[in-house]
Length: 468
Image (cartoon, one colour):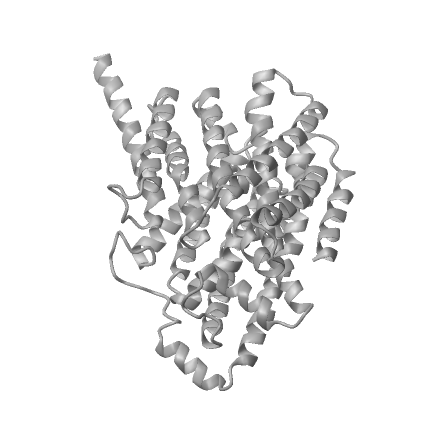
């Protein structure tokens, strides 16, 4: 673990010398290879949530979670066809520049503000997740675990900017996949009769991938998972600056499309792999049926893997957590610098923007760590994080759709629609018990998108009626 921390700090120091101004710091001068960006996207959206939660889901349930990833791929394809070309038209520092071009500066700042607020909440959950394996391994407190990861991640992100973030992501992806593979090998070795274990996995329906039932309360039925996953991916990869920032760092539209669609295919493979790991952990007796599902994987690592190998796997979990946190810090600082500070202060000197961007990175690190320390989870953290992120994804996606399909839409319509949809989704997601308490989380983005578009249509219609 110590060697791993030293390596990521070294990478950050190396790229610190290459960050000459704000454009380079936040976008890498648009010269980062698409393959590195693709791997970085996978590592960023994976986080520690996938590494510890998905094996737990595979152990306790089956592989129907994989239906979500089919929707993820379809959503990415849609974004690459309809949204991505607009990001390579002219100079665009963030995902929300195009909203200013279509509606106005207030819409851009509102969208960026909504992104930053909910991104901070959602990624606080992801940072909180790292306390689970670290406390099991080291007996550190939640505060110590979160603070340790937060400080190391801040240092290399603060120094090297988006270049350091992306290349460390590539390394981290390989590390946590290697850790998962090691865990799978050890689990198989602990099973006395592998054919019988495989038969028990099959008979227990652990390999079921599709659920054809139609339900608004069950998250992993086919319609719910695919539709919800497609719109969630469209929003997260088409309107969320966390991902769009990486796509803007590629050399061309063609490279961005390859990175985006390729990441969808890799995510499907990766989720299937970690669900399989969970099924074999169940067959090896790692799930006592009592512990929280998020604890199954890290507990097995600590108690069953040899010394050294266990440290490697824990380093992989740390890698996943730090990958997401570093990406979040850089994208939040980018949006703060380009969407708020630069236009409001009238300051466009690239050197001064770089200094402010680093200050913003430090500030957001404090926000994420404090937010992580305030969370308590009574459900798989991957579900909690996706639920929180979905509060605004529908509003953002609906605004982009509105801009392209509703020619009469004005800035006031966009602002009203975003605000109404956000308030509505806060009630849907966070008010428990409430009128939407039984709604499955994959429906959050479709519902938010629909509310945004309906609100915009109503405001446009009312304005036209008053004009008569």
